[in-house]
Length: 260
Image (cartoon, rainbow, N blue to C red; front, side, top):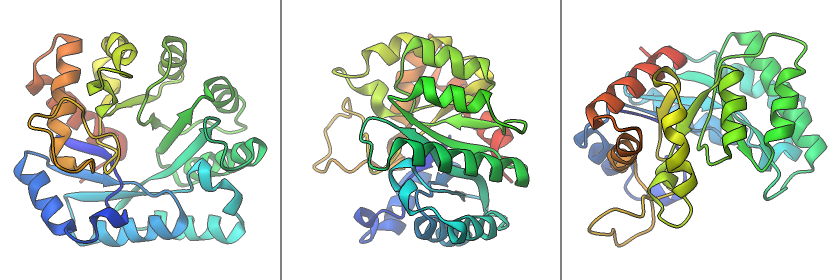
């Protein structure tokens, strides 16, 4: 299994990061992508990935929450990081109209800038969208250059949004949201519509711990070791074996991010 999105530079892992990785690999993971959400976080993710060549990779980008911090120096910083062999995607980038922590026009401007960077470098994009599907797809369709390959990570949206992302050729990342009996029921109905060759799985650790873990952990911090819980839930919804879901999602991650 490959976890295509984990925030392992988060300070909640500062006390036991090595142990978290050991538990993940013991649980059957063969790779983890570390998510870059700001320039300095992206640099920390690249540094951590460099310590585990062939098992960890990272992304480099600016999350829409931090779009207001973008400037020319940020773009140059990300460009330098993307030249590193362990950095395999531009992002996390996109739009978040749920929290609106940066003004929407600024989010859109920075989203376009990072998509242009992905196009320039020939890299895939690691994408975020929340409550912004219409604007997201409008931006994508209006790009003045060919759109990069990419994955809409942590997909929790509507059927219309899913259909639009698939039409745009994007991959779709599924998290422990699907394990949530309160919020994940709609996603359970949609996940079977994702073609085998577009499906990816992730934990988004330390967020979105699967609520169906038994026994329940003493902490609410999510870890990559529980990716199998996501795999199993996806398999049930798609009426496929867990082994099949693990195999196709790992192959998709290897192909999309050109993992070596």
